Length: 115
Image: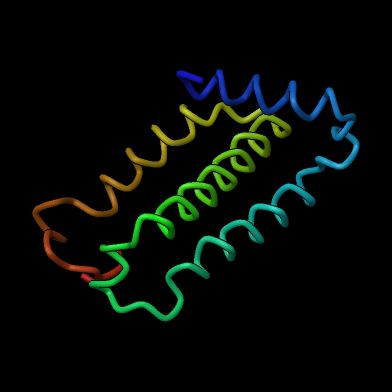
């Protein structure tokens, strides 16, 4: 798969071949996404900041699998809601640029209403 559209089509085909569309409501997909994010977080749960940046190779493989699961559910949810994910990300990044101007927030983790 070379693009987000390839992923969307591949996941849709995968679900259709298994007759899973009936289970892929936005509610169910958002819940499944939450579960996958929790599984991702589990790999980092008791690590220090430094340890979280230097995962052993086996853990890194497992994290990659969880990230793939998250990506699949995000793409599938967007598809089921007819959301153009690339457009949504572009729009959101433009909004973030307005909320968080680099010259005001550089090096700070404060939320946009705290500076």
